[in-house]
Image (cartoon, rainbow over all chains, first blue to last red; front, side):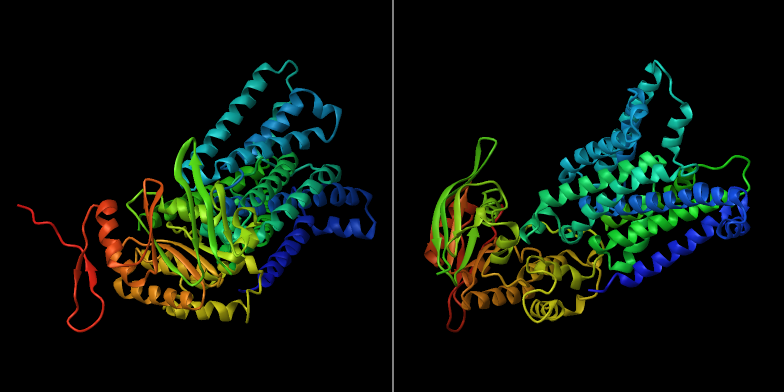
Length: 330
Length: 258
């Protein structure tokens, strides 16, 4: 029974370091002078650049990465499957669909909470659907196939909405969500997304010990005192809130939820409950690093965060699937 | 007075009776074997007693109705070993076995989790596996780890679904001898066993199950085994007298083919 404190402290230190570098980095590259100008108050424009562009962007990458890493770890613990993740399982796609519906029916225009609300409901429904079949989805193939089905279905419905939109809303909004980005977010956007993410985090962390116990299978875990229904509700509610809010803020960013838990697992003795918090922190660090790279890479147009995450994450996803396939034959 | 009482305990799934209503009383310190053919309803009986499947009727232990207990209370009272063992994640054996203390909080029952784990690992003869990741164990080793996880909680009632089926002869005897010791200390064990040679040597009492019914409830005796085994299992047992003193041992004979 080792403590996870050293891992959490190290990851938090890394996040702080990345945050400092991120605030010092503009879309044109590394630029600490602006921060100096903002802090000393000598340059009002610098204040706006740092306070209203770089800081919200940095914080958005942090909270979205945290939500993705934590939710990935929670879903993996619940399904006992290292390939479970909000993106792969279709939770993110359903959240995107929920947000799009809000736009379609004009609810998003009526209230700033509309998009977040729609995304959260979409994510909750998808997670609940997956959890309802969780005991039948222990096999990798079934689980991933259901996720693919759910993603495609949500994608098709979204295309349908676009086709029939009487008042076609901005296509770039949709692309933002399907590719994912934290650029041009405001502190007001963050204020809407952070409370549900925090609430989701609390729910998921309450399920910490039960998720550890679930490693022995749901029947054995129930025999040892697990309240499976309660655990499932906590994970569904927690990931639904966290993923819904993070999709509303940054769109569907894939694979962080797979990679982050995978990276920290050896440091917490492969304990699904102890994986949660470090996975969230690792997710935050990963997304902050990806967002930093986007700004430092000399590309003509800025790369999308979700694209970078998928480029790095998808190969690892395949590697885990391949290894797991091999080990189950042994 | 920690009697186990089954009062019309039954299991019905989609209108089909998987376990017909069963009423028996088992006093503490008994080693009870459940015997029957594959699919007879033995595992269903165990899960029904453990409160892990929807039931009609009731199972009471030590004056408490198992089905109405909260999961934690139930886990403090009885240990249940399922037939299949799930080994998600590469946790070390030590951590996996410690999960058996879940219902007792992070500190375990007495003397700290670490000491209890060490004790049960050596009692089960797998101290050398303590730090091995569970995904690198053989099928038999996994079965022992799962059993150790159930035994560590030291519950007064143990319901074990084929605890030794995957094990080598040496381990089978070692673990069943250990379980017999538990019974001598007043704990109650109900276990599914397929090997009638083991049943005849270790059980006090035998529950014979066929087609979802408890068809006989007997003390362990050669007569009882001779009566029920051929009918339920389709093969008559043979008995061999040892050279010296001691009880006859049971075996089955291969039928000659022409």
